[in-house]
Length: 73
Length: 173
Picture 1 (cartoon, each protein chain N blue to C red):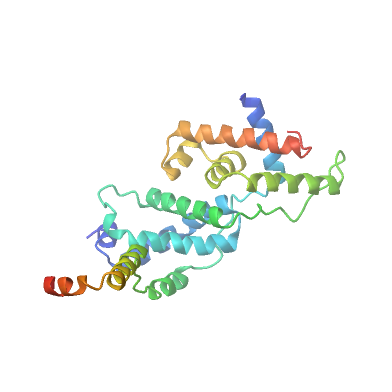
Picture 2 (spheres, one colour; picture 1 turned 180 degrees about the vertical axis):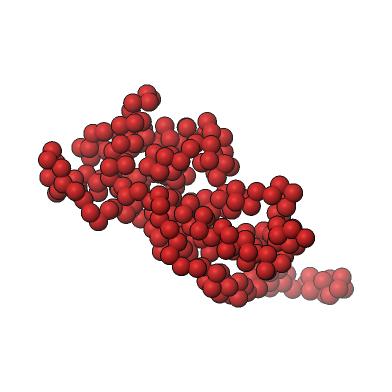
């Protein structure tokens, strides 16, 4: 692709879209940041849930492994 | 202890100082990509949230907090584009030219907006930054964590797609 073809598209885009340069932040976002920090909750990753589900499934299907697991504990 | 070292050690006061120093800069960068001021505010907070979570991985010796933040902000903005594939906002004031009546201009701008929203988020971000906002390729490359030649490839890809899509819609660059 040639440079003039890029320039043509550039001109078209610049004519059609509002320039976002020069847009300034209108308010302090620190209070919103503090709220976000306060919302911090303990989250269990999805793979831990998957592991737990697999373990529960194994215990239901093969109850014979329960004594073996208890022995290991 | 320096501000960046204190931040890396998990000091919340240091984090607040960095937040206040960089929030405007991060917001302005995100607006260039998402072109929506309300969304940009939320994404600015999300950027600093990710920064806060990653404080232990920050190396104060490298010292370039601004560049690190711009990179996180770019990823946050691209994630947003991926989730919300809305059209690029149009300007409210559309001056009519002698050559084109206002209705035609509106239709053309709507087609351009639609074509841009069909670009993949990564290409769209590069096209907006490079062609609309005329950000230097080097700055875009650093923000995206790619080479300058990869930026050029994305610009070419975006321009080729836009030319094709707009030609099909009857808009000829």
